[in-house]
Image 1: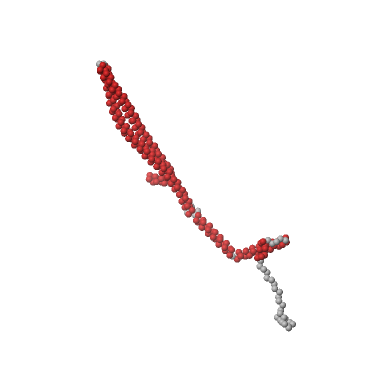
Image 2: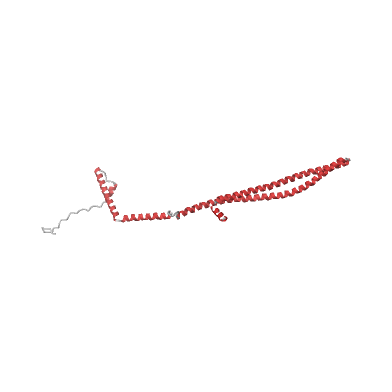
Length: 264
């Protein structure tokens, strides 16, 4: 059930949001790594400071021990037993402090070596993780660009699919609408051609031509009454009118020579 729920969630989740979450997690891990590395380096610095301070104290104690030994030797030479005892006791105290500081310095040197190695490893880990984070950031830009391209392609595919598939049961496709319009147009053209070829169509043409001739004749009469020259359309109509046949006079019957009555 958990696996099924995870798969269902991954299918519904926005890849862009998931990508941003992954980058934020990587950035948080890098921040924590830097804090740990900073603590390791700080420990190495503190160890180094303690080592330097112990070495400085050792130099002072060593100098004081030598001075105490010299002062004890001078008191011995002078026969001052009290001062000899005091300076000898001080020299022994300085010597004991030197021994303690030597041990402390040796321990601090070992600690400093380990801290230095840990600091170098921490620096290397931070640099490596930083490079990986930069690669992830660059990959995020690439994936975001691919995601935008994928969304655009999906929208284009959806638009192209809607042109060839029905959206619903009562919604026709573009191809079906086009076929319907073409069929209706072809039917109308066929009916027009039938009307043009029919007898009624020819009769309408003849009636329209007769009306046009009558109108031209009436315009010619009006122009003649007004003393105007016939228009170009009227002159063309007159020139196109067919010539009337001329009537020939009937010839007289031939009369035979020497006869008084014509012969039929």
